[in-house]
Length: 110
Image (cartoon, rainbow, N blue to C red; front, side, top):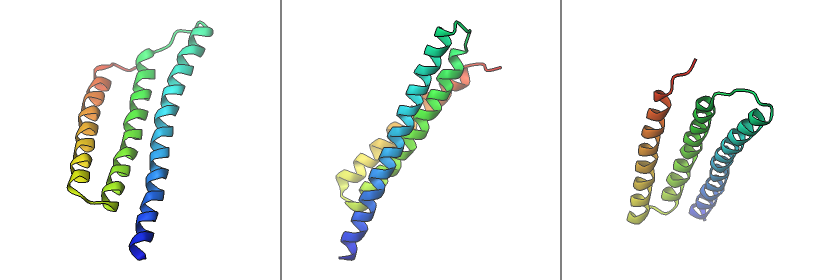
């Protein structure tokens, strides 16, 4: 009974954190698109690298929530397959984070 409550508790947090991560990534994408569109409509010059940097930061932050979701899922059902999936997710997130951070550092900001 207690175990079932704990699993339900973790399931709720998985949904919440997955929704938060998805919302952050979608928000970042929409914000970047809207910034570019409004800058184009108003014929103002804009710094595409700054918009890209903000989008990249939102993507990285959203991916952090997906790692939390994977950890909660593994805590609910700790099989070997789930541990392997968690490891792969963390590895992918680490590689993405490394290359996105490297890309951000390559841009020169005023």
